[in-house]
Image (cartoon, rainbow, N blue to C red; front, side, top):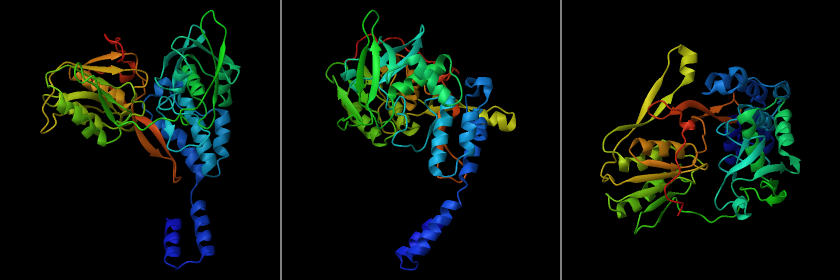
Amino acid sequence: MIVRLAALALACGALPAAALAHAAAQGEAAVDYRAAAQALEPLINHRYAYPERLPGGRFVLSATLAAERDAVRDGRSLLAFTERALMLLADHHAITGSSFADSYALVPSYADLWVEPRGGAYRITAVRPGSPAAMASVREGPELVAVGGVPMADAVAAFWGGLGTTGSGERDGFAARVLAAGRRDRVRDLTFRNPGDKAVRRRLVSLYDQRVGTMPPVTLQNAAITPVITINNALGDDATIAAFDQPMLSVDPAAPIEIDLTNTPGGGNTHVARGIMGWFAAAPTPYQRHALPSAVRDTGIAREWLELVLPRPGVRRHSGQLTVRVGRWTGSMGEGLALGLGELGATVCGTKMAGLLGAVEDLPLGTADLTIKLPVERLMQVDGTPRETFASPPCAQPRR
Protein backbone atom coordinates (compact mmCIF):
# COMPACT_ATOMS: atom_id res chain seq x y z
CA MET A 1 0.00 0.00 0.00
CA ILE A 2 2.90 2.36 0.87
CA VAL A 3 4.44 1.76 -2.54
CA ARG A 4 1.17 2.44 -4.39
CA LEU A 5 0.56 5.72 -2.53
CA ALA A 6 4.12 6.83 -3.12
CA ALA A 7 3.82 6.12 -6.84
CA LEU A 8 0.58 8.10 -7.02
CA ALA A 9 2.16 11.02 -5.20
CA LEU A 10 5.14 11.06 -7.56
CA ALA A 11 2.82 11.01 -10.57
CA CYS A 12 1.13 14.11 -9.15
CA GLY A 13 4.47 15.86 -8.62
CA ALA A 14 4.13 15.67 -4.83
CA LEU A 15 7.03 13.33 -3.97
CA PRO A 16 10.68 13.38 -5.12
CA ALA A 17 12.29 10.24 -6.53
CA ALA A 18 14.46 9.71 -3.44
CA ALA A 19 11.39 9.67 -1.22
CA LEU A 20 9.71 7.23 -3.58
CA ALA A 21 12.69 4.87 -3.37
CA HIS A 22 12.58 5.08 0.41
CA ALA A 23 8.85 4.32 0.43
CA ALA A 24 9.36 1.36 -1.89
CA ALA A 25 12.05 -0.02 0.40
CA GLN A 26 9.69 0.37 3.35
CA GLY A 27 6.99 -1.52 1.47
CA GLU A 28 9.40 -4.36 0.64
CA ALA A 29 10.57 -4.53 4.24
CA ALA A 30 6.96 -4.69 5.45
CA VAL A 31 6.57 -8.13 3.85
CA ASP A 32 7.62 -10.90 6.21
CA TYR A 33 8.85 -13.46 3.69
CA ARG A 34 10.11 -15.86 6.31
CA ALA A 35 6.71 -15.88 8.02
CA ALA A 36 5.11 -16.55 4.63
CA ALA A 37 7.41 -19.55 4.16
CA GLN A 38 6.61 -20.81 7.65
CA ALA A 39 2.89 -20.57 6.84
CA LEU A 40 3.09 -23.12 4.03
CA GLU A 41 3.26 -26.34 6.06
CA PRO A 42 0.31 -25.62 8.40
CA LEU A 43 -1.73 -24.19 5.52
CA ILE A 44 -1.40 -27.39 3.50
CA ASN A 45 -2.18 -29.57 6.51
CA HIS A 46 -5.31 -27.52 7.18
CA ARG A 47 -6.67 -27.17 3.67
CA TYR A 48 -5.31 -29.97 1.44
CA ALA A 49 -8.13 -32.34 0.52
CA TYR A 50 -6.08 -35.52 0.04
CA PRO A 51 -3.77 -36.03 3.05
CA GLU A 52 -4.07 -39.82 2.86
CA ARG A 53 -1.85 -39.70 -0.24
CA LEU A 54 1.04 -38.38 1.85
CA PRO A 55 3.51 -40.49 3.80
CA GLY A 56 2.06 -40.69 7.31
CA GLY A 57 -1.06 -38.79 6.23
CA ARG A 58 0.48 -35.34 6.83
CA PHE A 59 2.51 -32.81 4.91
CA VAL A 60 5.92 -32.66 6.55
CA LEU A 61 8.89 -30.79 5.13
CA SER A 62 12.07 -32.77 4.73
CA ALA A 63 15.15 -31.52 6.58
CA THR A 64 16.44 -30.16 3.26
CA LEU A 65 13.30 -28.12 2.63
CA ALA A 66 12.99 -27.01 6.26
CA ALA A 67 16.48 -25.50 5.92
CA GLU A 68 15.39 -23.76 2.69
CA ARG A 69 12.31 -22.43 4.48
CA ASP A 70 14.44 -20.99 7.27
CA ALA A 71 16.74 -19.33 4.73
CA VAL A 72 13.91 -17.45 2.94
CA ARG A 73 14.58 -13.70 2.97
CA ASP A 74 12.87 -12.28 -0.13
CA GLY A 75 10.28 -12.96 -2.79
CA ARG A 76 12.62 -14.94 -5.02
CA SER A 77 13.77 -17.32 -2.30
CA LEU A 78 10.16 -17.71 -1.12
CA LEU A 79 9.01 -18.76 -4.60
CA ALA A 80 11.95 -21.15 -5.02
CA PHE A 81 11.23 -22.79 -1.67
CA THR A 82 7.48 -23.00 -2.28
CA GLU A 83 7.81 -24.54 -5.75
CA ARG A 84 10.11 -27.24 -4.39
CA ALA A 85 8.04 -27.89 -1.26
CA LEU A 86 4.85 -28.43 -3.27
CA MET A 87 6.61 -31.20 -5.19
CA LEU A 88 6.37 -33.28 -2.00
CA LEU A 89 2.63 -33.56 -2.62
CA ALA A 90 3.29 -35.37 -5.93
CA ASP A 91 0.10 -33.70 -7.15
CA HIS A 92 -0.01 -32.15 -10.63
CA HIS A 93 -2.89 -29.93 -9.48
CA ALA A 94 -0.91 -28.27 -6.65
CA ILE A 95 1.24 -25.44 -8.00
CA THR A 96 2.43 -21.92 -7.25
CA GLY A 97 0.59 -18.93 -8.64
CA SER A 98 3.78 -17.60 -10.25
CA SER A 99 6.97 -19.19 -11.53
CA PHE A 100 10.50 -18.72 -12.86
CA ALA A 101 11.58 -18.91 -16.49
CA ASP A 102 13.36 -22.18 -15.67
CA SER A 103 10.61 -23.74 -13.56
CA TYR A 104 9.49 -27.22 -14.48
CA ALA A 105 6.73 -27.32 -17.09
CA LEU A 106 3.19 -27.78 -15.82
CA VAL A 107 1.74 -31.26 -16.29
CA PRO A 108 -0.51 -31.90 -18.17
CA SER A 109 -0.89 -28.39 -19.67
CA TYR A 110 2.64 -28.19 -21.05
CA ALA A 111 3.50 -31.89 -21.25
CA ASP A 112 3.36 -34.10 -24.32
CA LEU A 113 4.27 -37.46 -22.79
CA TRP A 114 2.33 -39.42 -20.21
CA VAL A 115 4.85 -41.61 -18.39
CA GLU A 116 3.99 -44.38 -15.94
CA PRO A 117 6.10 -46.92 -14.03
CA ARG A 118 5.38 -50.36 -15.50
CA GLY A 119 7.27 -53.55 -14.60
CA GLY A 120 10.43 -51.83 -13.51
CA ALA A 121 10.49 -49.47 -16.50
CA TYR A 122 9.00 -46.06 -17.29
CA ARG A 123 6.58 -46.50 -20.20
CA ILE A 124 5.12 -43.91 -22.54
CA THR A 125 1.40 -44.63 -22.20
CA ALA A 126 0.12 -41.60 -24.16
CA VAL A 127 1.52 -38.97 -26.55
CA ARG A 128 -0.16 -35.62 -27.11
CA PRO A 129 -1.28 -35.16 -30.73
CA GLY A 130 0.50 -32.40 -32.64
CA SER A 131 3.15 -32.01 -29.94
CA PRO A 132 6.95 -31.95 -30.32
CA ALA A 133 7.04 -35.60 -29.20
CA ALA A 134 4.41 -36.62 -31.75
CA MET A 135 6.18 -34.72 -34.53
CA ALA A 136 9.39 -36.57 -33.60
CA SER A 137 7.53 -39.87 -34.17
CA VAL A 138 7.41 -40.79 -30.49
CA ARG A 139 4.53 -43.21 -29.99
CA GLU A 140 2.72 -44.90 -27.15
CA GLY A 141 4.51 -48.00 -25.87
CA PRO A 142 8.27 -47.34 -25.77
CA GLU A 143 10.25 -47.09 -22.55
CA LEU A 144 11.61 -43.71 -21.51
CA VAL A 145 15.17 -44.79 -20.80
CA ALA A 146 16.92 -41.58 -19.77
CA VAL A 147 16.59 -37.83 -19.26
CA GLY A 148 19.66 -35.78 -20.13
CA GLY A 149 21.58 -39.01 -20.51
CA VAL A 150 20.79 -40.05 -16.92
CA PRO A 151 18.99 -43.41 -16.61
CA MET A 152 15.40 -42.91 -15.47
CA ALA A 153 15.74 -44.80 -12.19
CA ASP A 154 18.70 -42.58 -11.26
CA ALA A 155 16.97 -39.40 -12.50
CA VAL A 156 13.82 -40.12 -10.49
CA ALA A 157 15.86 -40.98 -7.38
CA ALA A 158 17.81 -37.73 -7.82
CA PHE A 159 14.57 -35.76 -8.22
CA TRP A 160 13.37 -36.93 -4.83
CA GLY A 161 16.82 -36.92 -3.27
CA GLY A 162 17.24 -33.25 -4.18
CA LEU A 163 14.11 -32.56 -2.11
CA GLY A 164 15.47 -34.56 0.80
CA THR A 165 13.11 -37.50 0.45
CA THR A 166 12.48 -40.70 -1.51
CA GLY A 167 9.77 -41.75 -3.92
CA SER A 168 7.77 -44.90 -4.53
CA GLY A 169 5.09 -46.24 -6.86
CA GLU A 170 2.87 -43.54 -8.31
CA ARG A 171 4.96 -40.81 -6.70
CA ASP A 172 7.74 -41.93 -9.01
CA GLY A 173 5.32 -41.69 -11.94
CA PHE A 174 4.70 -38.06 -10.97
CA ALA A 175 8.45 -37.37 -10.93
CA ALA A 176 8.96 -39.10 -14.29
CA ARG A 177 6.23 -36.99 -15.95
CA VAL A 178 7.73 -33.78 -14.55
CA LEU A 179 11.20 -34.77 -15.77
CA ALA A 180 9.85 -35.69 -19.22
CA ALA A 181 8.08 -32.33 -19.49
CA GLY A 182 11.37 -30.64 -18.62
CA ARG A 183 12.35 -27.11 -17.74
CA ARG A 184 10.40 -24.37 -19.45
CA ASP A 185 13.39 -22.55 -20.90
CA ARG A 186 15.33 -25.38 -22.55
CA VAL A 187 15.28 -28.22 -25.02
CA ARG A 188 14.63 -31.68 -23.58
CA ASP A 189 17.09 -34.51 -24.05
CA LEU A 190 15.12 -37.76 -23.86
CA THR A 191 16.09 -41.33 -24.71
CA PHE A 192 13.50 -43.90 -25.78
CA ARG A 193 13.65 -47.61 -26.52
CA ASN A 194 11.14 -50.02 -28.02
CA PRO A 195 11.35 -53.64 -26.78
CA GLY A 196 14.15 -55.39 -28.66
CA ASP A 197 15.41 -52.20 -30.34
CA LYS A 198 18.33 -49.90 -29.75
CA ALA A 199 17.82 -46.79 -27.66
CA VAL A 200 17.09 -43.59 -29.60
CA ARG A 201 17.98 -40.17 -28.21
CA ARG A 202 15.73 -37.23 -29.13
CA ARG A 203 15.97 -33.50 -28.55
CA LEU A 204 12.48 -32.05 -28.09
CA VAL A 205 11.59 -28.41 -27.61
CA SER A 206 9.63 -27.36 -24.57
CA LEU A 207 5.92 -26.88 -25.15
CA TYR A 208 6.46 -23.32 -23.89
CA ASP A 209 8.47 -22.73 -27.08
CA GLN A 210 6.25 -24.71 -29.43
CA ARG A 211 4.99 -22.51 -32.25
CA VAL A 212 1.29 -23.13 -32.77
CA GLY A 213 -1.40 -21.17 -34.50
CA THR A 214 -4.25 -19.63 -32.56
CA MET A 215 -7.16 -22.03 -32.35
CA PRO A 216 -10.77 -20.90 -31.94
CA PRO A 217 -12.29 -22.06 -28.64
CA VAL A 218 -14.64 -24.46 -30.45
CA THR A 219 -14.45 -26.15 -33.83
CA LEU A 220 -17.01 -28.23 -35.74
CA GLN A 221 -16.12 -31.15 -38.00
CA ASN A 222 -18.05 -33.78 -39.90
CA ALA A 223 -21.21 -31.69 -39.74
CA ALA A 224 -23.03 -33.63 -42.49
CA ILE A 225 -22.63 -37.04 -40.82
CA THR A 226 -22.04 -37.16 -37.04
CA PRO A 227 -21.06 -33.65 -35.93
CA VAL A 228 -17.90 -33.55 -33.81
CA ILE A 229 -17.59 -30.47 -31.62
CA THR A 230 -14.06 -30.00 -30.27
CA ILE A 231 -13.24 -27.80 -27.28
CA ASN A 232 -9.75 -26.40 -27.87
CA ASN A 233 -8.46 -25.99 -24.32
CA ALA A 234 -10.85 -23.10 -23.71
CA LEU A 235 -13.00 -24.13 -20.72
CA GLY A 236 -11.83 -21.08 -18.78
CA ASP A 237 -12.96 -18.61 -21.45
CA ASP A 238 -16.52 -17.28 -21.19
CA ALA A 239 -16.54 -16.80 -24.97
CA THR A 240 -16.54 -20.59 -25.27
CA ILE A 241 -20.22 -20.68 -24.29
CA ALA A 242 -21.31 -18.62 -27.31
CA ALA A 243 -18.81 -20.47 -29.51
CA PHE A 244 -20.34 -23.80 -28.44
CA ASP A 245 -23.84 -22.48 -29.03
CA GLN A 246 -23.14 -21.82 -32.72
CA PRO A 247 -22.66 -25.43 -33.88
CA MET A 248 -25.36 -26.62 -31.51
CA LEU A 249 -27.85 -24.29 -33.17
CA SER A 250 -26.95 -25.73 -36.57
CA VAL A 251 -27.49 -29.42 -35.82
CA ASP A 252 -30.70 -31.41 -35.61
CA PRO A 253 -31.65 -31.59 -31.90
CA ALA A 254 -32.35 -35.32 -32.29
CA ALA A 255 -29.13 -36.13 -34.19
CA PRO A 256 -26.19 -37.97 -32.61
CA ILE A 257 -23.20 -35.74 -31.87
CA GLU A 258 -19.75 -36.09 -30.35
CA ILE A 259 -17.96 -33.66 -28.05
CA ASP A 260 -14.17 -34.00 -28.09
CA LEU A 261 -12.53 -33.01 -24.80
CA THR A 262 -9.13 -34.57 -25.48
CA ASN A 263 -7.45 -31.13 -25.64
CA THR A 264 -8.60 -29.54 -22.38
CA PRO A 265 -5.55 -29.92 -20.09
CA GLY A 266 -5.75 -26.33 -18.85
CA GLY A 267 -8.99 -26.87 -16.94
CA GLY A 268 -11.46 -24.01 -16.67
CA ASN A 269 -14.49 -23.04 -14.60
CA THR A 270 -17.93 -24.42 -13.83
CA HIS A 271 -19.65 -21.42 -15.43
CA VAL A 272 -18.46 -22.47 -18.88
CA ALA A 273 -19.02 -26.18 -18.18
CA ARG A 274 -22.58 -25.57 -17.00
CA GLY A 275 -23.22 -23.43 -20.08
CA ILE A 276 -22.28 -26.41 -22.25
CA MET A 277 -24.14 -28.99 -20.16
CA GLY A 278 -27.28 -26.84 -20.12
CA TRP A 279 -27.95 -27.94 -23.70
CA PHE A 280 -28.49 -31.52 -22.53
CA ALA A 281 -30.39 -31.07 -19.26
CA ALA A 282 -34.14 -31.69 -19.26
CA ALA A 283 -34.48 -30.57 -15.63
CA PRO A 284 -32.20 -29.48 -12.77
CA THR A 285 -29.82 -32.43 -12.48
CA PRO A 286 -26.93 -33.21 -10.11
CA TYR A 287 -23.70 -33.59 -12.06
CA GLN A 288 -20.93 -33.49 -9.44
CA ARG A 289 -20.43 -34.16 -5.72
CA HIS A 290 -18.15 -31.99 -3.57
CA ALA A 291 -16.65 -32.58 -0.12
CA LEU A 292 -14.70 -30.12 2.03
CA PRO A 293 -12.33 -32.04 4.34
CA SER A 294 -11.18 -28.89 6.14
CA ALA A 295 -14.72 -28.53 7.53
CA VAL A 296 -14.25 -31.81 9.40
CA ARG A 297 -10.87 -30.65 10.71
CA ASP A 298 -12.38 -27.37 11.90
CA THR A 299 -15.70 -28.55 13.33
CA GLY A 300 -15.80 -32.35 13.38
CA ILE A 301 -18.83 -32.14 11.08
CA ALA A 302 -18.60 -33.39 7.49
CA ARG A 303 -19.71 -31.13 4.65
CA GLU A 304 -20.72 -32.47 1.23
CA TRP A 305 -22.98 -31.10 -1.47
CA LEU A 306 -24.22 -31.79 -4.97
CA GLU A 307 -23.80 -29.26 -7.77
CA LEU A 308 -26.65 -28.98 -10.27
CA VAL A 309 -26.80 -28.22 -13.95
CA LEU A 310 -29.96 -26.48 -15.16
CA PRO A 311 -31.51 -26.23 -18.62
CA ARG A 312 -30.39 -23.08 -20.43
CA PRO A 313 -33.21 -20.53 -20.71
CA GLY A 314 -34.14 -20.01 -24.34
CA VAL A 315 -32.00 -22.91 -25.54
CA ARG A 316 -33.63 -25.97 -27.07
CA ARG A 317 -32.57 -29.20 -25.42
CA HIS A 318 -30.48 -31.57 -27.51
CA SER A 319 -32.02 -35.02 -27.07
CA GLY A 320 -29.91 -36.97 -29.58
CA GLN A 321 -27.28 -39.53 -28.64
CA LEU A 322 -24.20 -37.85 -27.18
CA THR A 323 -20.68 -39.29 -27.13
CA VAL A 324 -17.90 -37.58 -25.17
CA ARG A 325 -14.30 -38.40 -26.10
CA VAL A 326 -11.62 -38.03 -23.39
CA GLY A 327 -7.93 -38.78 -22.88
CA ARG A 328 -4.86 -38.00 -20.80
CA TRP A 329 -5.06 -34.32 -21.82
CA THR A 330 -8.61 -34.04 -20.50
CA GLY A 331 -7.83 -32.29 -17.24
CA SER A 332 -9.56 -30.69 -14.26
CA MET A 333 -12.74 -28.97 -15.51
CA GLY A 334 -12.51 -31.08 -18.68
CA GLU A 335 -12.82 -34.12 -16.43
CA GLY A 336 -15.71 -32.59 -14.54
CA LEU A 337 -17.50 -31.69 -17.78
CA ALA A 338 -17.04 -35.20 -19.17
CA LEU A 339 -18.46 -36.86 -16.08
CA GLY A 340 -21.22 -34.27 -15.81
CA LEU A 341 -22.30 -35.02 -19.37
CA GLY A 342 -22.18 -38.68 -18.40
CA GLU A 343 -24.65 -37.98 -15.61
CA LEU A 344 -26.90 -36.44 -18.29
CA GLY A 345 -26.83 -39.63 -20.32
CA ALA A 346 -23.77 -39.25 -22.55
CA THR A 347 -21.44 -42.13 -23.39
CA VAL A 348 -17.95 -41.18 -22.17
CA CYS A 349 -15.18 -43.05 -23.97
CA GLY A 350 -11.49 -42.90 -24.79
CA THR A 351 -8.66 -43.49 -22.35
CA LYS A 352 -7.93 -42.51 -18.78
CA MET A 353 -8.09 -38.78 -18.16
CA ALA A 354 -5.43 -36.69 -16.42
CA GLY A 355 -6.78 -37.69 -13.00
CA LEU A 356 -6.22 -34.23 -11.51
CA LEU A 357 -7.32 -34.06 -7.92
CA GLY A 358 -10.12 -31.94 -6.56
CA ALA A 359 -11.18 -28.34 -6.91
CA VAL A 360 -8.37 -25.80 -6.58
CA GLU A 361 -8.43 -22.61 -4.53
CA ASP A 362 -5.88 -19.78 -4.61
CA LEU A 363 -4.45 -19.46 -1.10
CA PRO A 364 -2.15 -16.55 -0.13
CA LEU A 365 1.04 -17.13 1.84
CA GLY A 366 1.12 -14.60 4.67
CA THR A 367 1.56 -11.02 3.49
CA ALA A 368 3.74 -11.97 0.52
CA ASP A 369 2.51 -11.45 -3.03
CA LEU A 370 2.45 -15.20 -3.68
CA THR A 371 -0.38 -17.70 -3.77
CA ILE A 372 -0.47 -21.45 -4.02
CA LYS A 373 -3.12 -23.25 -6.03
CA LEU A 374 -4.18 -26.15 -3.81
CA PRO A 375 -6.90 -28.81 -4.17
CA VAL A 376 -9.14 -28.06 -1.18
CA GLU A 377 -12.34 -29.86 -2.22
CA ARG A 378 -12.72 -33.51 -3.15
CA LEU A 379 -14.63 -33.98 -6.39
CA MET A 380 -16.68 -37.07 -7.09
CA GLN A 381 -19.29 -38.48 -9.36
CA VAL A 382 -22.80 -38.13 -8.02
CA ASP A 383 -22.66 -41.65 -6.56
CA GLY A 384 -19.54 -40.76 -4.57
CA THR A 385 -16.95 -42.39 -6.84
CA PRO A 386 -13.79 -40.23 -6.83
CA ARG A 387 -13.45 -38.36 -10.10
CA GLU A 388 -9.77 -39.22 -10.44
CA THR A 389 -10.47 -42.98 -10.49
CA PHE A 390 -12.81 -42.84 -13.50
CA ALA A 391 -11.69 -45.07 -16.36
CA SER A 392 -13.60 -44.82 -19.62
CA PRO A 393 -13.98 -47.66 -22.15
CA PRO A 394 -12.34 -47.25 -25.58
CA CYS A 395 -14.41 -45.37 -28.14
CA ALA A 396 -16.14 -47.53 -30.74
CA GLN A 397 -14.84 -45.34 -33.56
CA PRO A 398 -11.25 -44.12 -33.97
CA ARG A 399 -10.40 -40.43 -33.69
CA ARG A 400 -11.47 -38.54 -36.80
